[in-house]
Image (cartoon, rainbow, N blue to C red; front, side):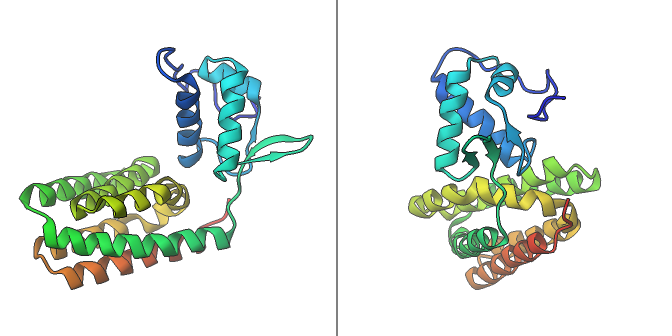
Length: 225
């Protein structure tokens, strides 16, 4: 059994052109944030290199970078492991996310036009279908895309930059509760779209704040593996 938990053929080989070290880093980070490599998973350099079709050196460099950023723990004499987030870590990050998202919703209500509203509607419909199909991975990815679109519509580059720093980690925390949130999440998204469409900044702010807090609560109440 492969300790990395990834059957051969499920991870596409990386293309050689371009900065290989960066591409390996991005590939591993995506596998971690989607929980294809779950928290606590032992990461063996040689096996990861085989899955990605690269040598061990770029994998080693990527793991060191992921360790610096808090995604991977390097343990002496044991190796590398996907970091297991504590409840306190999740709570702190999701609290910051609430502040950023609430302000983004307010700005989106002030700035959005018809095209922006239509894009949010399309993402909400996609999320609704993912929930109906019980496709947790797609629901989590679509949820992230929806929030990214709200941030884009806010039109504040500094806010967007700050949000980008927490976006992937939020997705990491959101995935375990995606099934639990299910239908309620996209209902809240539709309420947010209505507030933004009405250009009601206060209602958009309050709706997004409540939505983000519900996600935080769902994370702490999630079913443990």
